[in-house]
Amino acid sequence: MINKQNIMDNKGSYGNFSKEEMEHYTEEARLRWGDTEAFKQSQERVQKMGKEGLRKVLAESGTLTREIAQSMNEGEDPTGERVQALILKHYEGLRAFYEPNLDIYLGLADIYVSDERFRANYENVAEGLAQFMHDAMMHFVKMREV
Image 1 (cartoon, rainbow, N blue to C red):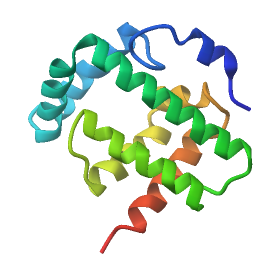
Image 2 (image 1 turned 90 degrees about the vertical axis):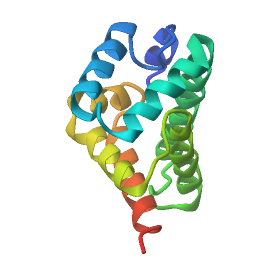
Image 3 (image 1 turned 60 degrees about the vertical axis):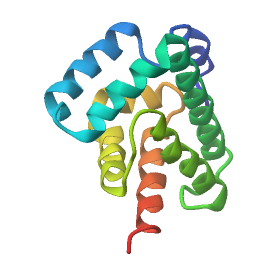
Image 4 (image 1 turned 60 degrees about the horizontal axis):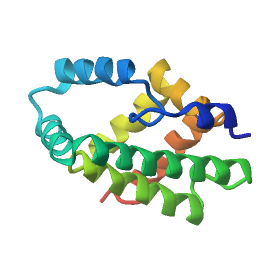
């Protein structure tokens, strides 16, 4: 079931994360990926979109996450057509920050289940969502690999 309390508590400009969490994650990302093109793109794009633009992008992302959770709760398979259409939106939504590729997306899928903070972010929306997202993203990549 979707955790409605978490959705209602999501008042900030940072999606499901607090300002402090976003600042911490940004610094962590800078340390891990600061010299990558994707990180540079992300920093430039966030700066260009401004606070209001970022709030809008994160709100849209939150809506998409809840749609995916609803699909999961309705018994959809992560490899199914409906979920995969939503995962395509998820993948394309990354372009607000950087140009994704399948390798980056695989890494992101792994972070959703291996990093407790990210897992908790999805589990706060709906129990089992982190693994569901992971499985759907893995299938998305598998179907596009040559």
